[in-house]
Length: 278
Image (cartoon, rainbow, N blue to C red; front, side, top):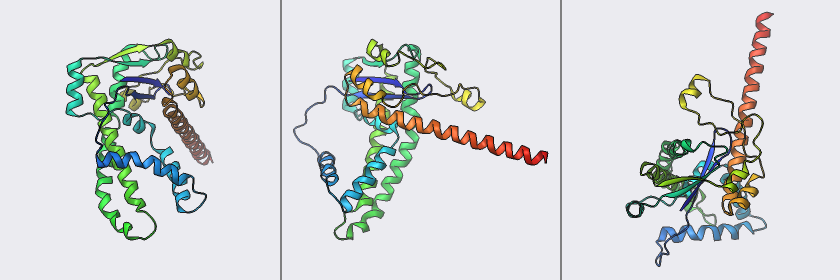
């Protein structure tokens, strides 16, 4: 197992787990068989020229693009269970956390890992529970002929996705608590950030008190669209490209919304000031 910690902006980072040695299983559970069957079925539906299958996959893919990159990242960790926990403790093996030391200070790595593990845990737990509660109410939709029970499958997917994110955050927490990690900065990782922007050349570990007091530094992008190709090439982890592309797109959109909101607030204040003078 190897972890990758990549700053996306000066305040947000992506963590990804490359699980190198998965144990082969001779007998798959019904749940796992269903999960393995989904991509194959989805790919067939995408080839449909028209009809509800084509429409479903189009809207479904758009919905998948909106799932937060943090959720996808946590799902990259193998779900923590007693067997895996005992195995990692008994081996006492420290897993590499590959990060860019020219952007992130080494002593901040465990702090960032801890934050990424815990900042969305409560949200995933709440949404897991609500998805689970909603599943029985979707059963009547299965009585409709021809069409599949789309609400049921959607809630089932979201329920499973939030559960995986929860177990992934537990695994990341466990690695930090047990200190089963070793921060490692490599030239290929550092070269991704070899030309830092003029406004800042480092990832800033922002505390909650700084945000509340309004003294936190301005957030700006460290990776730009297209950087996922360089990441995949330099780190030789092709599956990481999609994660980085998603994270960059979502963080950039978030910053653009913040800028637009600030402009609207400034405009509203200026109008209010003008009306007061009159």
